[in-house]
Length: 276
Image 1 (cartoon, rainbow, N blue to C red):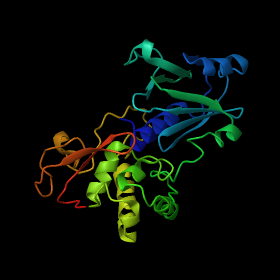
Image 2: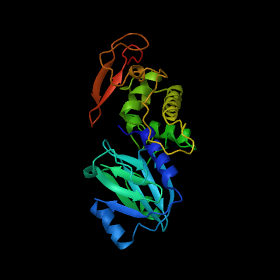
Image 3: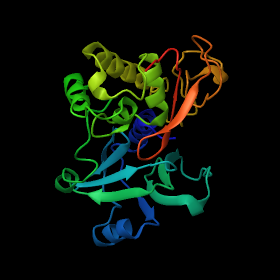
Image 4: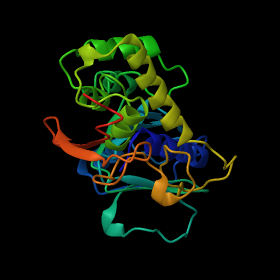
């Protein structure tokens, strides 16, 4: 499922493929995007930059036009060379941005909008994002203050809130709490300053470890597995997520699982390593 690491890698690949290139073809199945293209064509514009912001991607085009996308649970961006066969059905295509060198295709992307810089700055859900876990200028003090501003929220739910911290999803939520030895159902107000620091540092460590770029300038599709344990065996890549009933990798206690929060997202934890 797309979390901050997946989005970061997608934006990095899109930037390598498209930045500095002129759009030679634009296709979309989304009426609102097509309307913009009909009025002010996307073709002929230069891709100036591509960036990730938590779980959002922005593709900046010349003429103050920004394509904003969010993957939610099922969306993905692919990059192909001209004439290369797509790995997914054309039925799933939502957007095509093509240049002379590459073709970027968005499949089943549920949120896609064109913005100017001014309208993007006001866009609900984007303009209120908390510090991006993967940003080079990550503001730890602001992230800690955001956590503290939600004292009654359970810590795992607070980590999922993109207004608190941008980029963490359901997998990393459970993994970060386990590695920090913090019970995910504790309220934020019970956390010590050291625990808050540990949670933020662990989140940064885990996500950064999953976006290491060994591709240099090559355009590649990331196919590696998400990993928090540093173990090479794919069956041992995560500490607790998806391991309900299996023995804890530290103490052997069966991993517990329970739905949490208003969205009933499943949380995994070790009752012994993360006591209430």
